[in-house]
Amino acid sequence: MSEDGLTSGVDRVGDAAASAIAPAPTTGAAPGATISTGPRLRRRGAAAPTAPEEPAMCFDRATLAYGDRVVWSELSLTVRPGEFLAVLGPNGSGKTSLLRALLGLAPLAGGQLDVLGHPPRRGDPAIGYVPQHAGFDRDVPLRGRDLVGLGVDGHRWGFGRLSRDGRRRVEAALEAVAAGPYADAPIGRLSGGEQQRLRIAQALVGEPALLLCDEPLASLDMRYQQEITELIGDWARQKRGTVVFVTHDVNPVLGYADRVVFVVNGRWAAGSTDEVLTTETMSGLYDAPVEVLRVRGRIVVVGEGSGAGFDIDEPHHFPEPAGTHP
Ligand SMILES: Nc1ncnc2c1ncn2[C@@H]1O[C@H](COP(=O)(O)OP(=O)(O)OP(=O)(O)O)[C@@H](O)[C@H]1O
Ligand SMILES: [Mg+2]
Figure 1 (cartoon, rainbow, N blue to C red):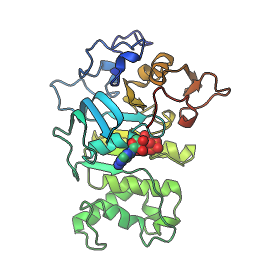
Figure 2 (cartoon, rainbow, N blue to C red; figure 1 turned 120 degrees about the vertical axis):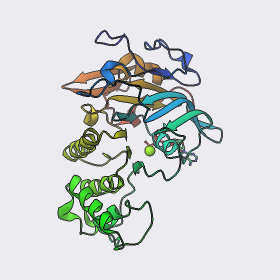
Figure 3 (cartoon, protein in one colour; figure 1 turned 90 degrees about the vertical axis):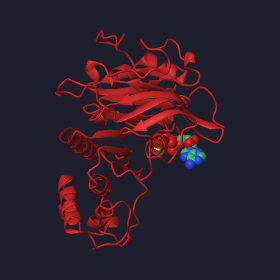
Figure 4 (cartoon, protein in one colour; figure 1 turned 120 degrees about the horizontal axis):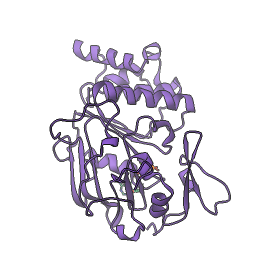
């Protein structure tokens, strides 16, 4: 039972060896079932749906593998339109792979996945994608405005050939992320936070229904982290867009995340932050003693025996998860 006495519990904790995680958080569902979202998981202020709504995405016992290497398995997770899903987990746990599955770039080895009502398909214009940041060369001959323009007509190159409507959309996207003042500067000369805003504008310019963001907060200081999170969270609320937000640190998104999925070494747990980020669930996922503390409104995860506390944004300090990497 969750802290507030509700029995909705974690959606599920699972992997191929889900039974190895004991004690299981309250699930109330058979393994593999798709659990409906409880009332407390609904977006704040949203009206109760009157009719069943097509999910924004639905993983049903989904397994992703590269060759023999199973990244995560038997993942069951349903996200409704307008929800904000935070994807958490240490390096190499399969967070980017989860986005790649949604983009149709990584086929499942088992189970099913539907995105916006159909199986994933590459180049779906209804999906905006902010890839894990690779950085821009300082001298790359590209202005922020050009980068955003590339998002208008898919991935076709050709600067300066946008239609009037395309140019209007670029302006609107630049305005949405407040990047107007530096939209004409060479992108490689901008700060990490400014570059990130432009990358988000590029993803939003296609007016997607679903926005996938892969570690958009990486290497940003706390103020920029908050700004970027607000930008994406506010977009979701205003447009009723669905967000999948990969992050090492859950704290910046605590006010936005309707639910989280934590993946580690093939295992996963999904539910609200209060349900997943508990000592019991995290210890089960890691198969090691892990303590989850709430300190001044922040969530801190501490591995027993590490000698020092560590934050969830420093996943490399987690205890080694059970099982072995190949
Ligand atoms: N195309 C690929 N072919 C083979 N293995 C891959 C491929 N992409 C990722 N992997 C492997 O799958 C595992 C998960 O990778 P993924 O990039 O999804 O992790 P991640 O959680 O995003 O990690 P990080 O936090 O470092 O970004 C890793 O062991 C990685 O080496
Ligand atoms: Mg990644």
